[in-house]
Image (cartoon, rainbow, N blue to C red; front, side, top):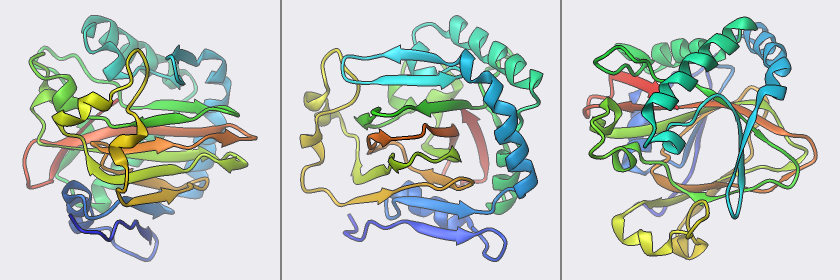
Length: 267
């Protein structure tokens, strides 16, 4: 594994993203890809205002060692209750439509162009059920998301879901609001492997920090408007937030082959 574990940052207005950056995330040779000015300021600001009234509709899931507060569903939490998940996905789509919040669609369209993708839409099951296109995450003062990884190919194995057949999974996050201090994404140059399950926190969220002992890491503190991509099958955490809420919109995306051209999204 390459010991250089660094992020790539570019300004969309003056630099081309290119498929090589996606490959670097997939291969584990790049920690984070940060794209600034991906969306026009007016579009981003409008969506930032539109989502505020929905904060009171956020739902908090409690774990022994953490909490997760979201507007919108989260597939990994409902992997055994897919009827509930698809119902929540439909309700979330209706809810965001009431305030014309279309940040996910605008972000997908911009990324499709930036990475020259042939398609980039939410995943759909053969029966027509559509996966949620995004969720909004709210990290309040004192909240930390423990060390974890996200791997839908592992979590949905044997469930017959289209996303379980993906070859690669990546993640897109848009920073809607910064916290005063903390809130860094901490990414480690180690992908999950089955032997790591001995480090899983029983009845809690994530893994013991010992699983990434002596592993190269990259800390990144997003600023408002940043769009950043990472490979979530590698271990990562969100460090403790201080002051104002840290608010992001995000979704996972993946590819069924190594061409990295036709992508699907979900959350």
